[in-house]
Length: 326
Image (cartoon, rainbow, N blue to C red):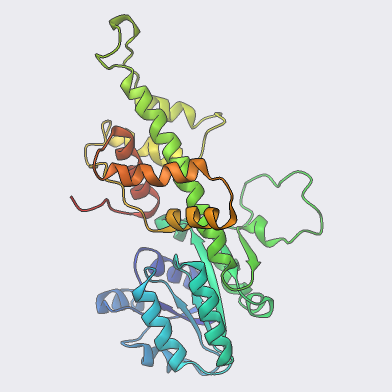
């Protein structure tokens, strides 16, 4: 299939590369002409404007927007809506607030073209590992785009299949992507995914902070231990009930920088944790862990700990995310 990739940052460029490897045709656009030229050198069709992007299609146009949530995505989609025609598709693969998806889908429907939201997880590793995707939109459109999603997804891989999963269950989740529901449902599901991510990361950070603190001179001398944190991370990776990819990234960070001195501990957030806690309040669902993990990030900007450095190290590991400016 031919589609346009609009936004060639850390994830957008690699999504385009994975699609090209899978035989799809990419029309590439970014405000950075060097990013466009680099991808064009790998086989994409470069474009210098959104208007030029729209002109690179003979039939149905599929625009995949991969930009930061907020004004960059909003203005780009507004322009694409103005350029769109009946039957065209706009895919927002960034971390957009799901209520914005609901509004945009209604605007697209008025022009008789389609809007799909794709919550995309995989970070800078997705090119090789594949991307976990949570998709919102009407069934007909999502089904028509399946060749794109199937190419991007990790596939069954070597992970054991879930015991007792129904024989007639949708096969797509086993391959790493799902149709979550109508427009907005994809980003809503990804939003909660990221809220959970906050909680998991905070648990690791606090645990390693406790291990590090056992050598504190505030403790009786005979109760002080100097525990090798890289070794702990490594042993927990193997056979432990708390093994995970986040722990793998933690082990890698500690192996090269035992004290995580390259990180300040001022932990950034991209909004999804905040939105998840807001959703919990709207639904009157208690979310103690997720809320505390979000507030811990706010606290890190005025009072940092070793655990906060670990949070920053994990964020950098899976997504290349940088810390808050000091």
